[in-house]
Length: 322
Image 1 (cartoon, helix red, strand yellow):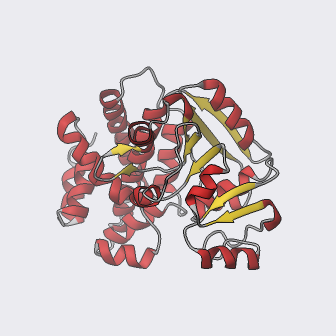
Image 2 (cartoon, helix red, strand yellow):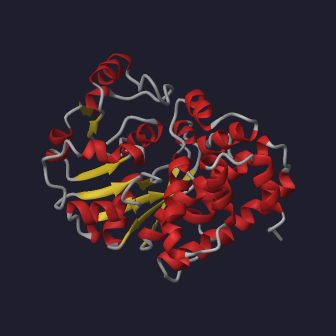
């Protein structure tokens, strides 16, 4: 469900084992071009597909009706508008969310949104996480994915569908923790980008990321207390790759802000969604009730939404680090 780079990468992974897939894309013109070219015309254009193994449709109800497992890969700000067209029930489906964001307005992680709004049982909801950039999947570089699900047997079954010569998989019952970590690492990657744009060096970036992990720990232990190891790749690994990689759109977005771009001009130039922009506001609003000490999230929020100078805000942040 979705037509961007991450959706395209997941389709590539799934088709290494599945005979065929159903693929929902919003735009008919994009579908027709995909069929004609044999690849996604807008994202990961180097990845070739056997079009005979893909059943494309812009009708979300048709795709949902004909599928047992639904993998949602739409940007979080647009999820609600896609689902508004839905007349088919979801509660008997196995839902996988590969969306690394929070549903705006409700301020719900996507798994909670499906559970509360569509009555999908928690054991039928999985999340896909880990340090896995779509661009590296396209190049078939070794990558690691974690499937989070309260029903570990279902997680293992889905993980088996993903595993291959360049994809290693693991499972984890910490659905909410993985999702919140996926949201937070995008915010921290924006912070890393801002610092890069301001010409802070590698020494400071290391301190920033170590403080980000501590901040993530504090938040996860408050919002979803659980025995977890945030050194695992689904947490720390994803934080590192999103903060450091040139493939990270959140880092790129932050770098542009650090260099002096306005939020709007950076968004226009990127032509892609930086989930961390929306995630920053959602986490800030959630934290009004949780009162976790989150200086990095606060700094990014002040820069993006309060238009405080990145130079001033990051200088204040550096004074709070150890």
